[in-house]
Image (cartoon, rainbow over all chains, first blue to last red; front, side, top):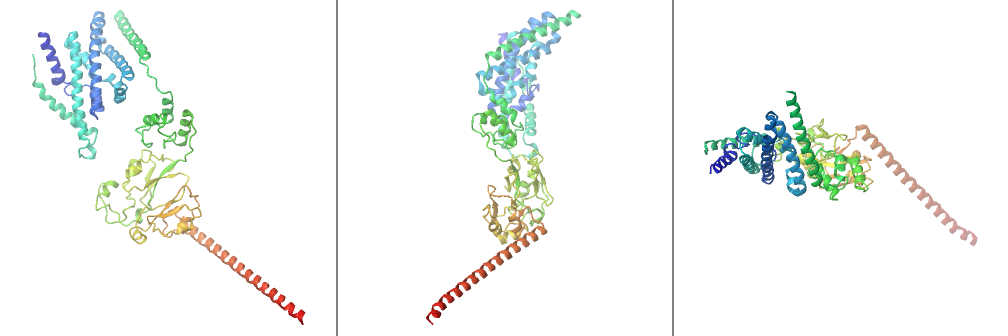
Length: 196
Length: 318
């Protein structure tokens, strides 16, 4: 029961209260880059969720089976980047073979997950919060879902903004930036949510 | 201390090695066969993703070429050189299309009459929205606010001396972004070797066209009569050159009463042309006269002969 409560709390926190994009401001690059269409945003969200889940799993083992016994916790960041980079490479190959449509839809942004700080953030947060294996994976997956929620909402807003009559100087990215700021402000409303 | 460093090095090296091996295996397992011609064609294309070919960027064009949907010379920017290389890769002959460049068909500029002075946003489309079709009396002429200049990614089009944009033939790649930006639709593609242009797009009748612009084509048809190659015709009150037939002889430029066909001849050239025409006409007239005289002489001689013949039997009778 206690386990369930903690998982619920972690999920709620990762999706809403401490949303990776809108509260922790991690993973802004794909958030701005791939949010022009809902389809690609969904694909990107799914890819990030997938990578974050697996990265949490793998980095948990790297941390607890390799780094801690060797007393190399300070190598965390380097080791995690290594893991995430190879993982993304692997997923890219996998997608190109099995889901070519998603591969072409994600285009250049798939390799960009390599440098998506949200993925690295998940791994490092897992360690610093002292999560167990299950908690880590849940945090990773729900963090990815939170990312997906944010990017899909953002993409649907941007799709409508395409048709909005706005000054030429605001067209495109500037307007998207303002929108992102307003969305972050809206997500601050969730900070009152606490489940303990 | 040293052992720590070595341990860290070893751990990371081994981790890297393991992941490297996994990736190497995965690259074999998940190998996707791509067309080997694709990267080669990509190397031939300029990679500017300008969209001049009508496809969404160079990689889309390369794919279309491989699938046979696009011609090997579909890239106007790469031109004949790229077409040749791509043709070699695709194993077909390149149709030797001549390089084309953009051209603005208006020489109104300062000679075009203005309805009012426009001082709004310096943009053609913006100017078009004001006062019903913009500040010019002519509804077809270049507004000269340089929307095409801004649209050009190659720095190839500049506002010329008389306020009309001029294309630099060396820099122009015929991507036609300027034509897309022009609200008057007076930028067209012409073969780079052609030197003669009707510099007017005004479809109004002669008198009306003259009223709005001193340089307007009035559709008089003198050029049509002058052209020996049937290359210029008056369509909708404005002369249009058929570049498949035009031989750059520039005769039409010299007969144009409004100097609406470029290159505009100088006064001397016109005088020379007139003198030449006059000489030709004189020669022709002289030839005609000679011919007439010769004919008359012939006839007279024939008559004389007839008379002589007629006279002979009479004499015999005597």
